[in-house]
Image (cartoon, rainbow, N blue to C red; front, side):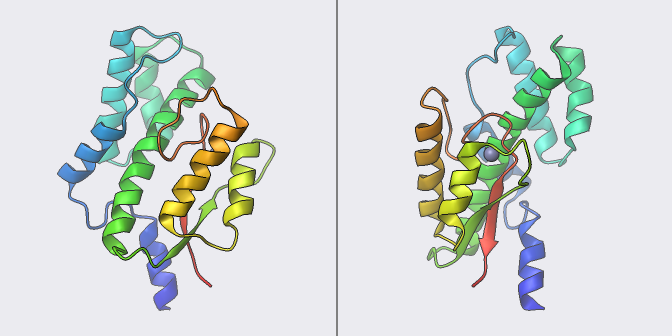
Length: 174
Ligand SMILES: [Zn+2]
């Protein structure tokens, strides 16, 4: 029972961080270059949109609808930009939250996400290497190592090993 509760709590990355702290982290983690095919202004507007929706925990489709008014890109291009940026922000918030909950870094984590035809080779490797649970800093290091190995050109931030990643940090219980 206790285990189940702790697991359920992990799905709410807001816990123990105030909205202002979340926003600050989100601003820090947001990528600062322009997105392919977009002007600097459009890129900034898209980022503002994603930031504005972080504390509301808006769904991807809500953000997509608003994004279409900003930039004239295909649906899949927009989706890729938004997913990538959102992933980085949410993972940064998640990391800080987990550090608050587990300051001694005693807990173990894995890389959790769907296994289907869209699953990247990068994430498959990360999952393989973290299948028995690893500490948070080790997980972060493995994510970075695999991202660099599979796609040296990918300009990554801490937790996003490739565009449109659907994987997240998940608590591992022995
Ligand atoms: Zn991935």
